[in-house]
Length: 301
Image 1 (tube, rainbow, N blue to C red):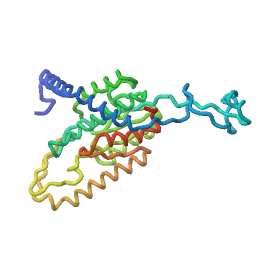
Image 2 (cartoon, rainbow, N blue to C red; image 1 turned 60 degrees about the horizontal axis):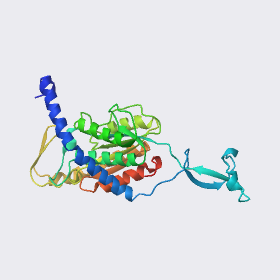
Image 3 (spheres, rainbow, N blue to C red; image 1 turned 135 degrees about the horizontal axis):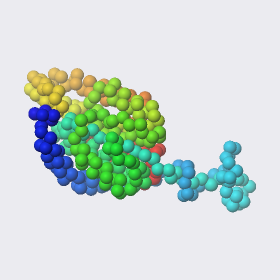
Image 4 (cartoon, one colour; image 1 turned 180 degrees about the horizontal axis):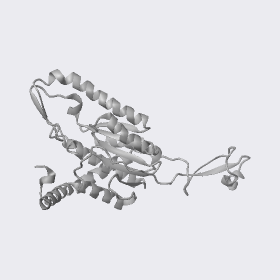
Protein backbone atom coordinates (compact mmCIF):
# COMPACT_ATOMS: atom_id res chain seq x y z
CA UNK A 1 0.00 0.00 0.00
CA UNK A 2 1.42 3.45 -0.89
CA UNK A 3 2.48 5.55 2.10
CA UNK A 4 0.02 8.30 1.25
CA UNK A 5 -2.84 5.77 1.33
CA UNK A 6 -2.14 4.75 4.93
CA UNK A 7 -4.29 6.61 7.48
CA UNK A 8 -2.35 9.22 9.43
CA UNK A 9 -2.77 7.56 12.87
CA UNK A 10 -1.54 4.23 11.51
CA UNK A 11 1.34 5.89 9.71
CA UNK A 12 2.37 7.65 12.92
CA UNK A 13 2.16 4.38 14.87
CA UNK A 14 4.36 2.63 12.31
CA UNK A 15 6.86 5.44 12.49
CA UNK A 16 6.98 5.22 16.27
CA UNK A 17 7.59 1.48 16.10
CA UNK A 18 10.38 1.99 13.55
CA UNK A 19 11.97 4.71 15.70
CA UNK A 20 11.83 2.51 18.79
CA UNK A 21 13.33 -0.39 16.89
CA UNK A 22 16.13 1.85 15.58
CA UNK A 23 16.83 3.44 18.96
CA UNK A 24 17.00 -0.02 20.52
CA UNK A 25 20.28 -0.63 18.72
CA UNK A 26 21.66 2.81 19.48
CA UNK A 27 23.55 2.19 22.76
CA UNK A 28 25.50 -0.81 21.35
CA UNK A 29 26.18 1.17 18.19
CA UNK A 30 27.55 4.12 20.16
CA UNK A 31 29.71 1.84 22.28
CA UNK A 32 31.13 0.17 19.18
CA UNK A 33 31.69 3.55 17.51
CA UNK A 34 33.57 4.81 20.59
CA UNK A 35 35.74 1.69 20.58
CA UNK A 36 36.57 2.09 16.89
CA UNK A 37 37.43 5.76 17.43
CA UNK A 38 39.55 4.96 20.49
CA UNK A 39 41.50 2.33 18.56
CA UNK A 40 42.29 4.83 15.81
CA UNK A 41 43.03 7.68 18.23
CA UNK A 42 45.60 5.57 20.08
CA UNK A 43 47.55 5.13 16.87
CA UNK A 44 47.42 8.76 15.76
CA UNK A 45 50.00 11.32 16.81
CA UNK A 46 48.79 14.84 17.35
CA UNK A 47 49.25 17.16 14.42
CA UNK A 48 50.62 20.61 15.05
CA UNK A 49 50.35 23.66 12.87
CA UNK A 50 50.72 27.37 13.28
CA UNK A 51 47.74 29.55 14.00
CA UNK A 52 45.92 31.78 16.43
CA UNK A 53 45.84 30.28 19.90
CA UNK A 54 47.27 30.47 23.39
CA UNK A 55 49.30 27.24 23.49
CA UNK A 56 53.02 27.70 22.77
CA UNK A 57 54.44 25.60 19.97
CA UNK A 58 57.96 26.78 19.03
CA UNK A 59 60.35 29.64 18.38
CA UNK A 60 61.59 30.35 14.86
CA UNK A 61 63.91 32.86 13.28
CA UNK A 62 62.40 36.24 12.34
CA UNK A 63 61.66 36.54 8.60
CA UNK A 64 61.08 39.58 6.42
CA UNK A 65 57.39 40.41 6.55
CA UNK A 66 56.88 39.28 10.15
CA UNK A 67 55.31 41.83 12.45
CA UNK A 68 57.67 43.41 14.97
CA UNK A 69 55.08 42.71 17.64
CA UNK A 70 55.54 38.98 17.00
CA UNK A 71 59.18 39.07 18.13
CA UNK A 72 59.87 37.41 21.47
CA UNK A 73 62.44 39.82 22.95
CA UNK A 74 63.38 37.59 25.87
CA UNK A 75 64.28 34.68 23.59
CA UNK A 76 65.99 37.01 21.11
CA UNK A 77 68.18 38.45 23.88
CA UNK A 78 69.85 35.03 24.22
CA UNK A 79 71.16 35.14 20.67
CA UNK A 80 72.35 37.44 17.93
CA UNK A 81 69.14 36.69 16.01
CA UNK A 82 65.53 37.74 16.42
CA UNK A 83 63.00 35.01 17.21
CA UNK A 84 59.25 34.87 16.74
CA UNK A 85 57.04 32.95 19.15
CA UNK A 86 54.56 30.67 17.38
CA UNK A 87 51.39 29.36 18.99
CA UNK A 88 49.46 26.24 18.08
CA UNK A 89 46.30 26.40 15.96
CA UNK A 90 43.24 26.17 18.16
CA UNK A 91 40.37 27.43 16.00
CA UNK A 92 37.84 24.61 15.77
CA UNK A 93 36.62 23.60 12.34
CA UNK A 94 33.04 22.60 11.58
CA UNK A 95 32.14 19.20 10.15
CA UNK A 96 28.76 18.38 8.59
CA UNK A 97 28.08 14.65 8.63
CA UNK A 98 25.52 12.83 6.50
CA UNK A 99 24.67 9.25 5.61
CA UNK A 100 22.32 7.70 3.07
CA UNK A 101 19.38 6.02 4.83
CA UNK A 102 17.42 4.93 1.76
CA UNK A 103 16.32 1.27 1.31
CA UNK A 104 19.28 0.31 -0.92
CA UNK A 105 21.55 0.78 2.10
CA UNK A 106 19.82 -2.15 3.82
CA UNK A 107 21.58 -4.62 1.52
CA UNK A 108 23.97 -7.29 2.76
CA UNK A 109 25.06 -10.22 0.61
CA UNK A 110 25.98 -12.39 3.61
CA UNK A 111 24.35 -12.76 7.05
CA UNK A 112 27.84 -12.47 8.54
CA UNK A 113 28.31 -9.01 7.03
CA UNK A 114 26.72 -5.77 8.24
CA UNK A 115 24.32 -3.97 5.97
CA UNK A 116 25.66 -0.90 4.24
CA UNK A 117 23.40 1.20 6.49
CA UNK A 118 24.83 -0.33 9.67
CA UNK A 119 28.40 0.29 8.52
CA UNK A 120 27.59 3.85 7.43
CA UNK A 121 26.03 4.63 10.83
CA UNK A 122 29.02 3.12 12.62
CA UNK A 123 31.58 5.07 10.61
CA UNK A 124 29.61 8.30 10.94
CA UNK A 125 29.39 7.98 14.73
CA UNK A 126 33.03 6.91 15.01
CA UNK A 127 34.06 9.94 12.94
CA UNK A 128 31.96 12.15 15.24
CA UNK A 129 33.68 10.55 18.23
CA UNK A 130 37.08 11.50 16.81
CA UNK A 131 35.86 15.03 16.13
CA UNK A 132 34.52 15.23 19.69
CA UNK A 133 37.91 14.17 21.08
CA UNK A 134 39.59 16.85 18.97
CA UNK A 135 37.26 19.60 20.18
CA UNK A 136 35.74 20.14 16.74
CA UNK A 137 32.23 21.35 16.00
CA UNK A 138 29.95 18.95 14.12
CA UNK A 139 26.32 18.12 13.39
CA UNK A 140 24.13 16.02 11.11
CA UNK A 141 23.66 17.69 7.73
CA UNK A 142 20.01 18.34 7.00
CA UNK A 143 18.87 17.95 10.61
CA UNK A 144 18.59 21.67 11.33
CA UNK A 145 20.59 21.16 14.53
CA UNK A 146 23.41 23.71 14.94
CA UNK A 147 27.00 22.50 15.01
CA UNK A 148 28.42 22.12 18.50
CA UNK A 149 31.25 20.46 20.41
CA UNK A 150 31.47 17.97 23.24
CA UNK A 151 29.66 14.90 24.45
CA UNK A 152 26.24 16.50 24.32
CA UNK A 153 26.70 17.22 20.62
CA UNK A 154 27.76 13.61 20.07
CA UNK A 155 24.78 12.17 21.95
CA UNK A 156 22.45 14.49 20.08
CA UNK A 157 23.91 13.32 16.77
CA UNK A 158 23.31 9.70 17.75
CA UNK A 159 19.70 10.48 18.63
CA UNK A 160 19.19 12.23 15.31
CA UNK A 161 20.46 9.15 13.48
CA UNK A 162 18.09 6.92 15.46
CA UNK A 163 15.11 9.14 14.68
CA UNK A 164 16.05 9.26 11.00
CA UNK A 165 16.58 5.54 10.48
CA UNK A 166 15.01 5.77 7.02
CA UNK A 167 15.42 8.43 4.37
CA UNK A 168 13.93 9.32 1.02
CA UNK A 169 16.99 10.74 -0.70
CA UNK A 170 20.25 9.04 -1.60
CA UNK A 171 22.04 12.39 -1.80
CA UNK A 172 22.58 14.98 0.93
CA UNK A 173 20.39 18.07 0.95
CA UNK A 174 22.00 21.25 -0.28
CA UNK A 175 22.60 23.78 2.45
CA UNK A 176 24.62 27.02 2.25
CA UNK A 177 27.36 25.72 4.55
CA UNK A 178 30.00 28.11 5.90
CA UNK A 179 33.15 28.53 3.86
CA UNK A 180 36.07 26.27 4.89
CA UNK A 181 33.78 23.81 6.68
CA UNK A 182 33.93 20.08 5.92
CA UNK A 183 31.19 17.79 4.58
CA UNK A 184 31.63 14.06 5.27
CA UNK A 185 29.19 11.92 3.29
CA UNK A 186 28.58 8.18 3.72
CA UNK A 187 26.50 6.23 1.19
CA UNK A 188 26.45 3.77 -1.68
CA UNK A 189 26.06 6.60 -4.23
CA UNK A 190 24.21 4.53 -6.82
CA UNK A 191 22.81 7.64 -8.50
CA UNK A 192 24.18 8.69 -11.86
CA UNK A 193 27.60 10.34 -11.37
CA UNK A 194 26.28 13.54 -12.98
CA UNK A 195 23.65 13.83 -10.25
CA UNK A 196 26.22 13.25 -7.50
CA UNK A 197 28.52 15.76 -9.16
CA UNK A 198 25.85 18.48 -9.16
CA UNK A 199 25.40 18.19 -5.39
CA UNK A 200 29.10 18.07 -4.56
CA UNK A 201 29.99 20.85 -7.00
CA UNK A 202 27.34 23.08 -5.39
CA UNK A 203 28.98 22.62 -1.99
CA UNK A 204 32.52 22.95 -3.32
CA UNK A 205 31.62 26.22 -5.09
CA UNK A 206 31.02 27.73 -1.66
CA UNK A 207 34.47 26.75 -0.45
CA UNK A 208 33.31 23.64 1.41
CA UNK A 209 35.82 20.80 1.54
CA UNK A 210 34.66 17.25 1.77
CA UNK A 211 35.06 13.53 1.89
CA UNK A 212 32.87 11.05 0.01
CA UNK A 213 32.89 7.62 1.69
CA UNK A 214 31.56 5.09 -0.81
CA UNK A 215 30.09 2.12 1.12
CA UNK A 216 30.11 -1.07 -0.96
CA UNK A 217 29.03 -4.62 -0.23
CA UNK A 218 31.70 -6.97 -1.68
CA UNK A 219 29.11 -8.72 -3.86
CA UNK A 220 28.24 -5.39 -5.48
CA UNK A 221 31.80 -5.15 -6.73
CA UNK A 222 32.41 -8.75 -7.84
CA UNK A 223 28.94 -10.18 -8.66
CA UNK A 224 29.96 -13.64 -7.33
CA UNK A 225 26.60 -15.35 -7.93
CA UNK A 226 26.11 -18.32 -10.21
CA UNK A 227 23.24 -19.75 -12.22
CA UNK A 228 19.72 -18.41 -12.55
CA UNK A 229 19.22 -15.41 -10.23
CA UNK A 230 16.36 -12.97 -9.78
CA UNK A 231 17.50 -9.56 -8.54
CA UNK A 232 14.90 -7.51 -6.68
CA UNK A 233 15.15 -3.74 -6.45
CA UNK A 234 15.07 -2.15 -3.01
CA UNK A 235 13.54 1.08 -4.26
CA UNK A 236 10.81 0.02 -6.69
CA UNK A 237 13.19 -0.49 -9.60
CA UNK A 238 11.48 -3.76 -10.41
CA UNK A 239 13.06 -7.21 -10.80
CA UNK A 240 15.72 -8.50 -13.18
CA UNK A 241 16.05 -12.18 -14.01
CA UNK A 242 19.36 -13.48 -15.34
CA UNK A 243 19.49 -17.02 -16.67
CA UNK A 244 23.23 -17.34 -16.13
CA UNK A 245 24.82 -14.62 -14.03
CA UNK A 246 28.30 -15.74 -15.06
CA UNK A 247 27.78 -14.49 -18.61
CA UNK A 248 27.15 -10.95 -17.35
CA UNK A 249 29.89 -10.83 -14.71
CA UNK A 250 32.69 -9.25 -16.75
CA UNK A 251 30.46 -6.56 -18.24
CA UNK A 252 28.96 -5.82 -14.83
CA UNK A 253 32.38 -5.47 -13.17
CA UNK A 254 33.52 -3.11 -15.90
CA UNK A 255 30.44 -0.93 -15.45
CA UNK A 256 30.87 -0.91 -11.69
CA UNK A 257 34.55 0.04 -12.01
CA UNK A 258 33.63 2.86 -14.40
CA UNK A 259 31.03 4.12 -11.93
CA UNK A 260 33.57 4.15 -9.10
CA UNK A 261 36.13 5.86 -11.31
CA UNK A 262 33.57 8.55 -12.16
CA UNK A 263 32.87 9.15 -8.46
CA UNK A 264 36.58 9.39 -7.78
CA UNK A 265 37.09 11.84 -10.64
CA UNK A 266 34.23 14.14 -9.70
CA UNK A 267 35.44 14.35 -6.09
CA UNK A 268 38.96 15.10 -7.35
CA UNK A 269 37.66 17.96 -9.52
CA UNK A 270 35.85 19.39 -6.49
CA UNK A 271 39.01 19.20 -4.39
CA UNK A 272 37.39 16.52 -2.23
CA UNK A 273 38.61 13.08 -1.19
CA UNK A 274 37.09 9.79 -2.38
CA UNK A 275 37.26 6.70 -0.17
CA UNK A 276 35.76 3.33 -1.08
CA UNK A 277 35.03 1.03 1.85
CA UNK A 278 33.77 -2.54 1.55
CA UNK A 279 31.70 -3.89 4.41
CA UNK A 280 33.92 -6.97 4.82
CA UNK A 281 36.85 -4.71 5.78
CA UNK A 282 37.49 -3.45 9.29
CA UNK A 283 35.85 -0.14 10.24
CA UNK A 284 39.09 0.90 11.92
CA UNK A 285 40.95 0.91 8.59
CA UNK A 286 38.33 3.17 7.04
CA UNK A 287 38.28 5.51 10.03
CA UNK A 288 42.05 5.88 9.95
CA UNK A 289 41.84 6.91 6.28
CA UNK A 290 39.04 9.34 7.11
CA UNK A 291 41.12 10.88 9.88
CA UNK A 292 44.14 11.22 7.59
CA UNK A 293 41.98 12.99 5.01
CA UNK A 294 40.62 15.40 7.63
CA UNK A 295 43.94 15.95 9.43
CA UNK A 296 44.82 19.27 7.71
CA UNK A 297 41.53 20.68 9.04
CA UNK A 298 41.38 18.91 12.38
CA UNK A 299 43.01 19.68 15.69
CA UNK A 300 45.17 17.13 17.48
CA UNK A 301 43.51 14.26 19.35
